[in-house]
View 1 (tube, one colour):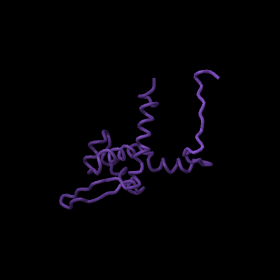
View 2 (cartoon, helix red, strand yellow):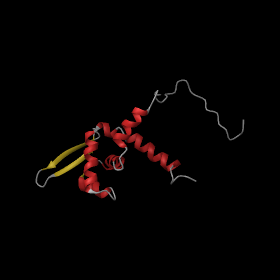
View 3 (cartoon, helix red, strand yellow):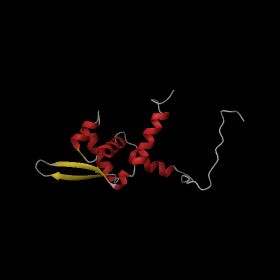
View 4 (cartoon, helix red, strand yellow):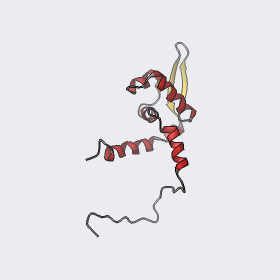
Length: 125
């Protein structure tokens, strides 16, 4: 065996990731919820900054139109990731926050960002 090859020894007591016969349905469901351009970006900002108003989110997301932000927030709300709360009537002010389901994406978002730092185009050698 060459010196650059590594042997992986599996710890029988270690937790393993779930194995699926066919992960296609899971990938389709995940993509439906997070696969739109602005969805993970919105989730990221709500993780990092907590509840935010529409204007604050728009300012944090360079390049998003009001229409696209509104559609993305509605979709995330429909999927149960984002909650919308009216905080004042005059003028109408709305605040968006993550639901428990949305906040559960935090470890996945952190792992994706870590992967990009190590292996993505910016981390490639």
